[in-house]
Figure 1 (cartoon, one colour):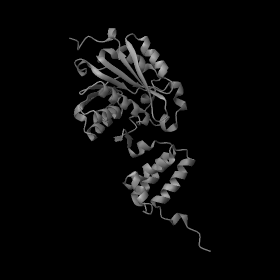
Figure 2 (cartoon, helix red, strand yellow):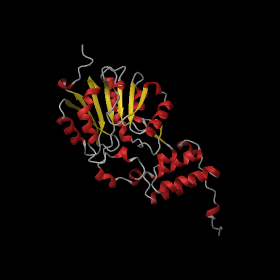
Figure 3 (cartoon, helix red, strand yellow):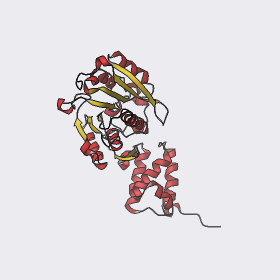
Figure 4 (cartoon, helix red, strand yellow):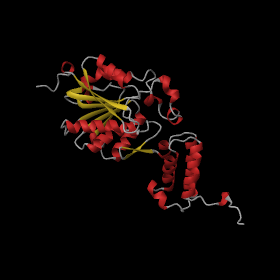
Length: 310
């Protein structure tokens, strides 16, 4: 009979770490346990996720192993994986994220797709885009990467968030086409508004109702910035602000494109409809949960600003 294996002295290979940690994350109810494990281990080992499978027998040790163990402990306590490694992929681009910004979601990629599709369909070779509440900058930056002639202004009321967005803009080579402004909602300085207005106003506002905050997963509720999640009321105040004030910032042919939470589409359409001058132009579902996620609104002729007309 062979001697029992001494688990304490069995080397911590990549394969063993993947197996043990995935099981541990499942027991700890860490979302997407296997993926979370792979992301942490790849960062700790200094390689790509796909490379882990060519290194199953490689032993992780020293500071790399200690870093991985610390991340595993914090992830099991529901700290978001993206904050632990300081990065999240969005629209096939890596973005720096910190606890000062909301972690980009796959659902929000639908909003980026809609902006890009609109600009191309409208023949806008030099579109001007305003991104309200930019956070990490992921929406504006992804748009600028795809639309090489576009320019954008991105706002946030958090200076720390703008620092993150600034890093991401430089990382992806769009900083010369992106102006970052510290501003609350639509309170923009007059000099920031381009002659003729913007072609697209895009926004992923804090739409979680205060009464629903306790229903969020602890990774979201306990770690992501509250101001990026909820308006502290019914989750609809940002849409009311846009309905009342956005028209003055747009070109006559301009559009507003917004992300909405689950089940909010009808309420947001009603808010825009009750503020004279807005026409509902479309609704799109995300590819993740197939939920109504993006709404588009254009200006009725009587509400269009007069600048830019002959």
